[in-house]
Length: 300
Image (cartoon, one colour):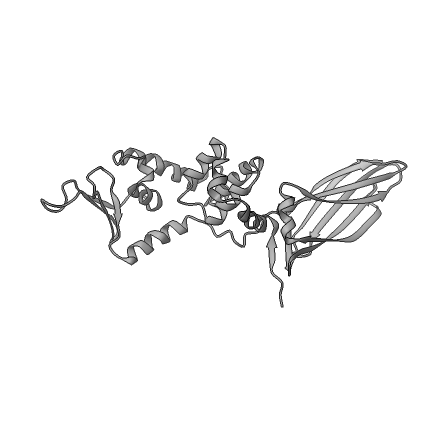
């Protein structure tokens, strides 16, 4: 039976949920991160929200950067068209829907405007359809109408679902603005340090952020194995040293929470003669086959 593969970053976010309710975590956010979470309420997935709340404060800026990068329709350009359009629609909603007791983008009309854009046609009935009617607006997107009614006569127009189909279409539009991240693969990378010991001996220190590691899930444990290939070349390009070794990693599932913001460290001693060398270090995670290769120069 094929064992499930899971990212430490995603699994950790789920494990931490049992320790603190989301509303309590949200209260601990600084103003900048509270503002971000508030503004993206219509497009952030439930899983992304949980991950964000459980991240250390220092890692939230990177999350925000990746959040918008996922939604960039053309990553090859400097401009993120999706992000620009989203915030432009928020500003427009605030200008268009000033009544109702709260900011326009937080009202039903604002939400639909942000998700679907300006309607093709907007009918307004400030006095309702009839003498006893209530203020009504009908927005048309092609042949698809959306109705808003100000039942309390206070400027707060609420969405009036004409049918289950209409609500389904609105939800579909909202979900199309949310990327599927459940199986998203994080970028595999490692940090590298070289320490000189003595007499030509060096210590290669590899640090892999736990959040970037993909594991096999076996019963109540998380396992993977790293394959390391180290090659050293002299100035003529001749290979003078090669080290190839497998390093297993085995964790209890419930201990993953303790790895937040930490690295898995591997130390590999290597002996070289005095001189200048070029060294390549290749690291592979055997669980998912991800591989990264780095090249450095050093003098012993």
